[in-house]
Image (cartoon, rainbow, N blue to C red; front, side):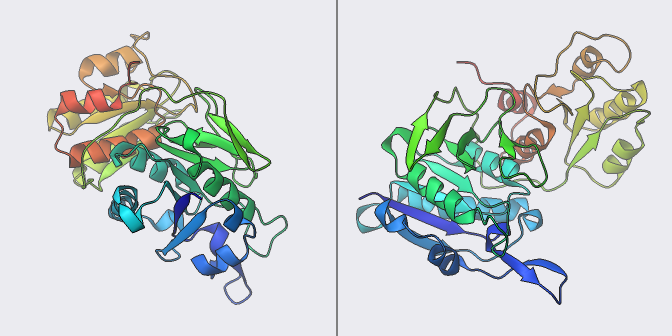
Length: 330
């Protein structure tokens, strides 16, 4: 039987209603979640690793990298400690970012599957147990090797570099808007519909924390970007409109930031598609790239922020950051 390490970190899957607090709070540890998940013993031998009950919105880059070291340690273990795969149980608020960070820094052909829940333990349906069973099923499947880090909730298998939370509360909120899902888990069996393409990677155990995200909208000028630079930003990600367009004032602030040595990444606020250089009017995507901004390809802005923070932490120069953020070639 396969052996799967399950790392519990908290999230909605660990929560229940607290009348005094007036809402959901984390109360279930890993053992309590496992006790609510019958049938795991028929799928794999589960090794539980309890890392607390932290809401996903509280994670910092240092926390994510520390969990990455825990995951890598289990992937690398040999003899009696060896596992076939790892499951991470966490809150869904930042699952898009944490899964992508691990996809960038972990090195192993063994599967890493990230899951959680959209309903707390007192709600119906409590989707946590079904999601955990699916995640263990996938982590134990030989066909899941070399997939990198993936996310599974509501039966779908999504790649970490594309997975996006599309709805605040829907059970099937996670989708991959660029290339689509990798597969599904049905009736206890993982069905892969495609393989993942080339993946980005960066060797680092450090990320910078002060990478600021500025979202462009109607009448957005450069004030927020200037303020981020004044506050000591390590890097800037701009979520531009469309394929990379903004008002000229925002580009002007970015040019001042780049002149002071701060890398600026151009992404789109759209959920899918790549930034481009087709527009040459002041503030158009082409003028951003010609000014020195690094295009993020099809990475959404929050994933571009993760890549930039890790890339700067790794000591990459501008060319290295550009290679990391670009869509990988087959």
